[in-house]
Length: 94
Image 1 (cartoon, rainbow, N blue to C red):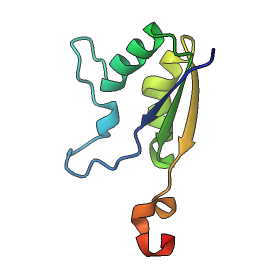
Image 2: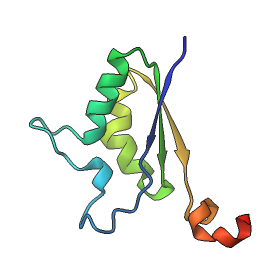
Image 3: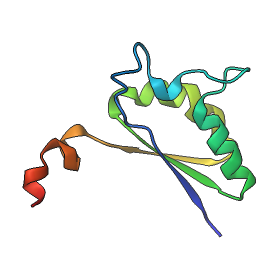
Image 4: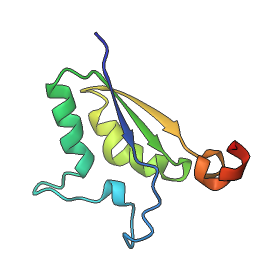
């Protein structure tokens, strides 16, 4: 059975400060928060992870996590644009 972990990581992180909050090292060995989720998903039998991210962070995202995990689990990227979200103009969806 194919099971996919979806990680929504397109947030801007305006309150975070400098850097990309999704890629900030948090663990004792430099792990990022997503490392823990991906580890648990693999242990539970997930065989794919889809990252929903912004195009402007793709290169760093791929370098920091995507390239590292692609040998362990299938990786796919989906790009979210501000102009294609409900929050950008909620009146057009009425």
